[in-house]
Structures are given as C-alpha cells and as structure tokens.
Image 1: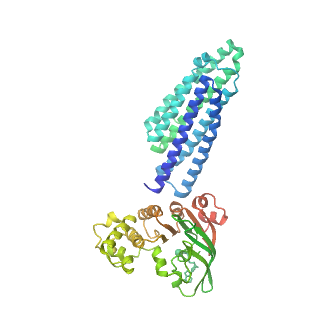
Image 2: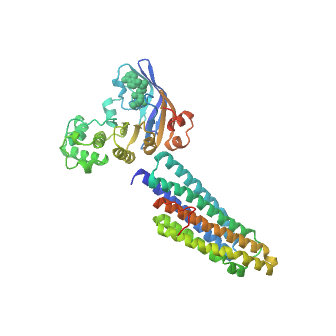
Image 3: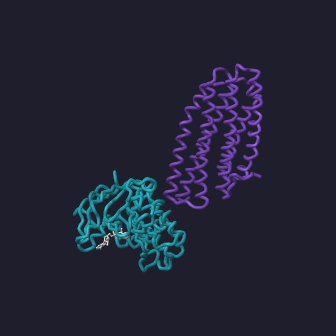
Length: 220
Length: 250
Ligand SMILES: Nc1ncnc2c1ncn2[C@@H]1O[C@H](COP(=O)(O)OP(=O)(O)O)[C@@H](O)[C@H]1O
Ligand SMILES: [Mg+2]
C-alpha cells in the first residue's frame, strides 16, 4: 500500500471510530430518556468532549494530508467527504448532548404515554439505525446502501410532522406537564435533524464513490 | 540522541560564503528534505555528510558535523569508512558500464569482499530493497544501460545499499525521471526509512511533502526554517518559507 493510501486508511479508521462513538451517544441518550436515568444522561454530556476531540483531530489530519500529498481524483473527493462528514458527526453528537441536557433538566419522569403517542422512542431507534446504515455505506463504499437512507429520512419527517398535533392535545389535557411535553417536542425536532445529518453524509459518500453531486436535487 | 547533527557549520568556496552557520539535528530513521531555490546551498550541505566537498579546491569548512555522535571531520575519521556508512544517490542515474549484477556488487568488491555466495546474497537483498529485483532477476548479466531511467536510478540505490550504510544521501534523485518512476522512488524512500536515515534534496515541493518527516528550507546559504514537514507545509513560522512553498517567489 502506498504512503498516501496508508494515511487515507488511518483517516478512515478514525472517522469510523468517531462515528461509532456518536452512535453510542445516541443510544445512551435514548436509554436515558426511556428509563429517566439522569446519570446516564450526564455521562452522554461528558462524552461530548470526546466527540469534539475527534472532530479536531480529523480536521487536522485532513489539513496535513492536503498539504503534504496534494491528493487528486477519488482521494481528493474522499478527503472532501470526510471533512464534511466530520462536521455532520460533530453536530449529531451535539444533538445527543442537547437531548441529554433536557433529561437532566426535567423535574419529573417523562410520561411514557406521551413518549408512545409521539413515537419519540421509535424515532430515536430509526435515527440510530440510519446513522449506522450510513456508517456501513461509508465503510464498504456501498452507494446503494447510502441511497436507501433517503427513504428512511422521509419516515422521520412524517413522525416529526405529526408530533405538533399530538403534543398540543396532550398539553391541553395535562397542563401541569407542559414543560416535559415541550422537551419531548424539542427532542423530536432534534432527532429530525439527525436524519438530515445522515442524509447529508449519504450524499457525501455517493459524491466520493461515484463523483455524483446529489445535493439540492430530488433523490429519485 | 540525534543520528546526524551539524553545529554552526560555515562553508566557503574561496571567498564565497555558501553555508552560513547551519545547525540542524536529525533523528535516526527519518527522512529530512532540503528545499530552497537553486543555488541556496542544498547540495553543498548534503555533501558535508560524505565529505564530498573535500574534493573541491579552496573549500573551507568550520563548525561540527556529527554522525552517531562522532565528528566526521575529526582527523581520526577515515573517509573510506565514512563513505561505507553514508551512501549517496545522484540526480542523474549513473550506472557503471557493467552488468546489472556487477553494478550492485561493485562496492563490495572494492572493499575487498571475495566470498561469492555472500556477494550474491547481498546483491539480491539490495535489489529487493530497492524494489528492482522482480524486474531484473532474469537478466542480471545484462548491461545496466539496458534498463530504463527509472530502473537505472533504483539500480544506483541498490548499489548504494549493498555496502549497508546507515545514512542515505539523495540529491534530487527523481528530477530526471517520469512521474511513474518518480512515484516508485518516493514509495521506496518511504520504505527505506525503516532501516536508514535519509536526507534528500528536492526542488519539488510536493515531493518534500510526500516523502519527508522533516523539512529544512535554505535561502542563500542560510537555514531559514527547519521543522516537521507537517508544520512547514501547514503553518510555517517564517514568512519567507511561506512565500517559497506557496510559489510566491523562487
Ligand atoms: N565547486 C564549487 N565552487 C564554487 N562555488 C560553488 C561550487 N559548488 C557550488 N558552488 C556555489 O555555492 C552555492 C550553492 O550551491 P549548491 O549547494 O549546489 O546549491 P543548490 O544545491 O541549493 O542548488 C551556489 O552559489 C553555487 O554557485
Ligand atoms: Mg543542488
């Protein structure tokens, strides 16, 4: 393997590690929400620092590879994709941290019936799955897998759209639980953005493997 | 400890001050690139380490040049011994008018080695190290001139390696080669640093980036900046270095 290939591979491995950490952050946040485990939520907030450290490291490694190797063609596209994916992952990490903060800040247990009615947990599971699928697409340069993400994102959008209505009627009936209802609505909003981030990353993978730009285009 | 070190080295060609107080220390198993505009003293600096400048009339050298902690300009240093430890590869491939085999065996023979088996083994090993073996193993008796330019350069590298030096000096080793041969030489350098300490002169900035761990930027006989290549190529300290590597002058 050439020197540049070795560098690109270790960059890929690093990106995969960061990705796995972000997936784990989301998973822990979901568990913390479901079991109202504030300690676990605090752990997620603490681990956000590790996600940030990865981001800085990957940025620096990309900069070095650009400066030292003048990459072209697929190598260039790979680096550009990694730079953006790095950013998407960092934001996804922020989202997990943000939800963990809600859990820590809320006074009482989340009402299970509201979690069920809004499909919040389901949405969590779906966004984790999306994130993992895009990771697999990245690891295997599998653009068919990357394309499958676009459909899944529509499902998250659907849950998100219905949530307003559900939360509004819940608040009308449980005025004393308005605060947590709003937290749940915000959580759903945030999870919808996890879907967006995954979709962006899928676009980057297709760009790097196939040299096709899918941004701002209908994904038929 | 540093493998190679120069301390306040000044070199004059007659009255011409070609190196001005150069202090650098290099670790073992690293590649150091010497960059800078033509005539800035890169080759002169490189030739300090095998004492090739000694061959030039009117050269005056002061300061210390150390390899493995020994001052190589000390009166006790034997230049023959020094050159066994410090191999050199030049810009233009310069194979001898001999067979491929004899080119590589040359250094051993002049050093009085006669054991046939030993020589054969060493030739094979050196050709493997220089990534040429697969291409020439069936025509070792052919003239070295039948090889392409890139192959000839790898042959010269094999010839330098055959006497098992620990330091390898390369003066623009790829500047006369096509891009594919250049890439091969660069990959080779990356492999060779596992066993050797390498100093390479290059006028190709991208090449310095690709092959070296450390970079020294020379300008009119002065060392302007010496640092990790990563640092030099992303955030050099000296504005002159930045101007040079971004192609704004030189
Ligand atoms: N044998 C020599 N006699 C006199 N001057 C020399 C000799 N070799 C080099 N020089 C001068 O020393 C300076 C540095 O040369 P050199 O080390 O070959 O530069 P570089 O390798 O960076 O192009 C140049 O100005 C050159 O003209
Ligand atoms: Mg020169």
